[in-house]
Image 1 (cartoon, rainbow, N blue to C red):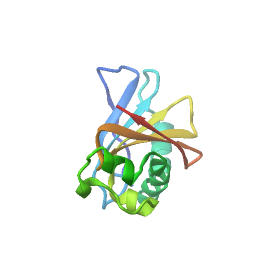
Image 2: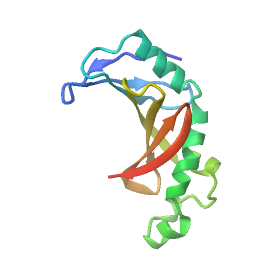
Image 3: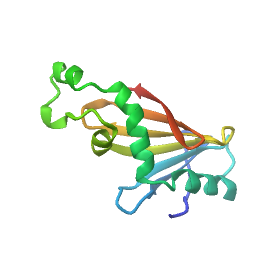
Image 4: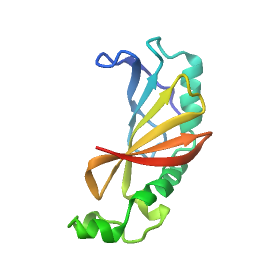
Length: 144
């Protein structure tokens, strides 16, 4: 796993970001952001990111189980979402194939928590943000 290369995020001075972080060779790069309150992320912050994201695809599968709570084939079909963008099988494994991890966010004051943000095939207007605590997905919020 690569080490995050954080750069100061000018528009939000308390955040530092790495725009091309790889959590696994077979996955596209994501943005990793770290809220420090202003100070540059130190080795402890970098190690925390690498440790939290080291499960790679397993994190996406875990997140998919929470995203599934906000998905219904019938509901999105009624909204006239094209069938090619819908997931017929309502199971975490199927959902995991239809989502794309875009960003991971960490907070210095909450060392056991982070959030993964996803783009989903059936909803182009919202992000599906999954909160993790102690390495496990615990909640999914839909934000737009």
